Length: 443
Image (tube, rainbow, N blue to C red; front, side, top):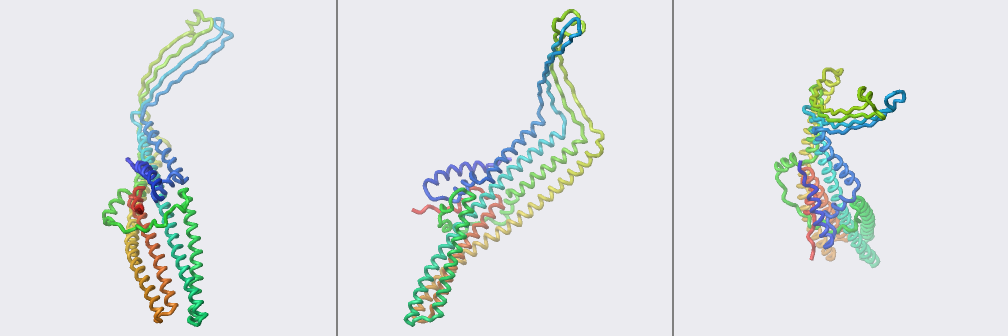
């Protein structure tokens, strides 16, 4: 299994490190900073590195095992007339090589699948980090927009209120119009307080993920967001079937289940291995004489042994048959989970595509609504000066204009969230994908 995800991370890190010194913080830089800061992703990375050792451990079971054994002992014989004690030495080198062992082969396959699954789970954690940081990033920008619009509305309604109060003093304004201006101003003040709280919470969330202050996020981060050309749904489905990480994780889970079934069935099969050994044994008697030579108290031997070992399982109380049946059912469970993962991915894909298309339409509609609301506000103000419209009409037109600005920001935010979700489902979400959300530097 070849994964170039980490390679892209390293390249992106180098590029972004240079860019950081030249301009404002970008989303890509924030995500890379979070990759080195967030405790969850750091823990998942260590887990993945540990799980990769299973490849070596599984393959090692198919390789020969070489061992060196030795011993030294001294035996006292105070009652013997021909010696006071005996010293014994021995060593042996043994090599054992499995020739036919289905269980060891299945263990190797299972270990390989577990290591691949760990890589996929790590990539899923990276995608989640990208999604979380991106959402936090644009939440800060969106909250900043809402606060900016709320503050502009507050200033405008304050001016309207002051003008209405002055006009009331000279009898050129009614109490109803003053009360309407007061109500709009009080609502705008409350909106500012709410927006400030939401912005503060969004910045705290971003800092928790990345370790970077939310104040570093440029408020203009959504100015350049524009709908891009999306692939056809059929192409997206094909890419999702190949690249979706949840599907790939389910595929590796099925591979593990197949290996477990093979290992369970292998318990009914013989195990064949070859063993070779070479060693020396010798003993030496203290104050030895001719009797030590006769009785073997002093001796030296060299041993060479080659053997073919065959073990055939016959009966184990039915546990082997039960384990095979269990492994077969677990394999079917993994197969159905893979089917469910594919169906879920396609469902999420269609939902994300619908969200992106809806977001595109909403952004276009809200941009047109802003133009219309601004014209209406200007026309109503002009008509008010001519006596054709009331102050209440002007206040309502101005309120609608500021509302349309916030609704555009909301549509942009939801479009971005849907785009990131679509990229995650289709397997396209990585660090380089975030470049499309980076506004060009202004001269």
